[in-house]
Image (tube, rainbow, N blue to C red; front, side):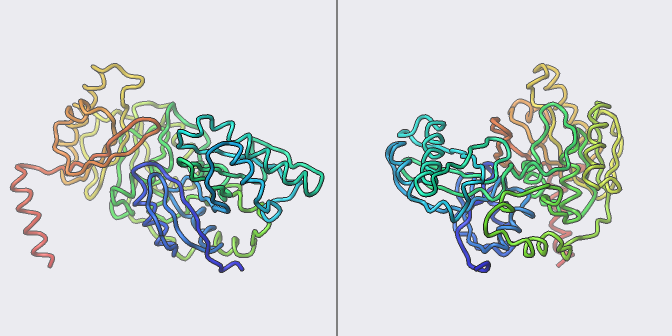
Length: 394
C-alpha cells in the first residue's frame, strides 16, 4: 500500500509557489495545481517523506482525507463526525485542529475549530465510550480544516510544527528572516553554489546558512527532531530511514559565503546558528558596516535583507539605501545584487535600475525582491559585451 499515490498539498508563502512546484517535481511528485500560497501534487508515502525532508520553500505538507460542502459550523460538525477517525488515530492519541478560513459564511475560525474538535471527540465517544484529548502544544495528530466559501477540506498535517523551524536556530536577532523565505529568495536568485555569495547585512545568519545548505544540497529537514507523520498508524520507519539517510545528492562547494553585520551581537548570534547547522567551514563572518566594504571577491553574487524602517527613522533609512547603491556601484562591479524591501522610496535611493522585480510577502509586509546587474561604464557597452560573449560561447 505504501506505493499507492494520493493527493497532497504543500503550503508556502505568496510569491514562492512556482519555486515550490519546481522543488516537488524534482523529487518525483506530480504537480496537479499551483494556487495561492499552495501547490497540490500526487505522490506516495516516499514522496510525502521526501517533501517534508527536502522542500526548502514548503511550510507544511497536508494530506487531504475528506472534502465536503457546508454553509454553517453545525454542518461542518456533522460532516467531520462521518469520517472514520480510527483509520488516522486512536482514542489514546492527543490532537489539535488548525482552521484556515476564507469565507463570509464562517466569520469565527475558532468556533469552526471548536466544532471540529467536538465532532472528533464525539465520534470516538459514541463508538468506544472514550474521548481523545485535545492538546494545543505538540499533539500526536495535527488536523487542518480549510474552508474557502462553502468548500471544506479536512487534512492530516504530516509536518507538525511549521517546516520553517529547521532546528538549527539556537538564537535570533529581532525580526529574523524566515528560513522558508530566505531559501525562496536564494532559489529565485538562481543560487546553487556556482560562485561566491555575500550578505553584508546578515543579522542572525539565516541567508548564509540556507545558502550553504543549498550549495551542499543538505536537506533542510535534516536537523528536525520530529515530523508529525512519525506518529501516524501507517508510518513506515524503514522507508523513512532510507529517505533520511540517502546522501546520493550531496554536492561539493568550491566557493565561499561571506557574511557581515554592523552589530557584534548579531554576528555572535549568527555564528552560534552557523555552528549549530554544521556549515561553519563554508562561511566567513566579520563585524563591519556595509559602507566599509572596499573590495569584493571576484565571481560573486550579493543577496541581502536590509532594515525596512520598522525600527529606524525615515531619514536614516533613506541614507542607508543611498549608501547601499553607492557601494554596489563602486565595489560590486560584475555582480548580480538582490535586495528585498517594501518601500518604493528606499529602492529609489539605491539609484540603480532593477532588471527584475518579484513580489514577495515578508510576514504581513508586501515586499519586492529586486535584481540589480552591477556593471562598470555605460549600460549600452555592457549589453554589447554580453551579446559578444554569448556569441563567442556558442
